[in-house]
Amino acid sequence: MSVGNSISLREWLRRDTAQAHARVDALFGSCDFATEQGYTVFLLAQARAWETLRPLLDDDSMARADALRRDLETLDLPEPEPLRDVSLPAKASLGHRYVLEGSRLGSTVLLRELAASSPELSARASAYLTESARIEPWKQLSTGLQKDRDGCDNDGAIIDDALFVFGLFEEAWRATDSAQAKIG
Image 1 (cartoon, rainbow, N blue to C red):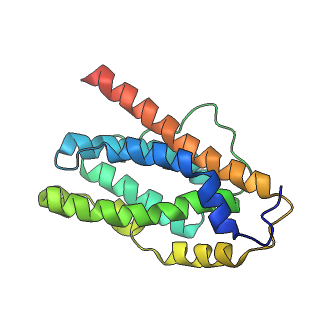
Image 2 (cartoon, helix red, strand yellow; image 1 turned 180 degrees about the vertical axis):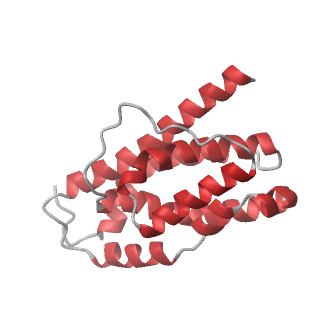
């Protein structure tokens, strides 16, 4: 499978991961940022996924994961354990980075939503969304993906890696949602 000259790798990734992206957006978008409980569920599920991915993170992504830890600490929340039985590759691929860096765009929207719906909560614990709203790393990756019209020998693997990360965030959501249901 090859991207070919018709579309960029970025467009190909967008197209082939659209359903997974929509599922993850729907799950995390269901959090009510006007309440601390809603924001807490969001942070805990995000943290579970980021902690699972921590061995793959570059400096920019590590800054986001560390900011998330600070928000959890500020809100006196436990740092979630990484998901179990997840087989991570030795290093991050373009597919992994596409999902992680692409999430910065949504973080900008979520930061505005948090500030509007819960200014006090935003002032106390928005380090993760603030760090995630720095879109320069996404712009750099996106530019490279947009210019790539030749494809790679492992195009299918890039898509699989992106779908893996979206799936990991879905799994982190389910694990967190289940834990919250048991508490509530």
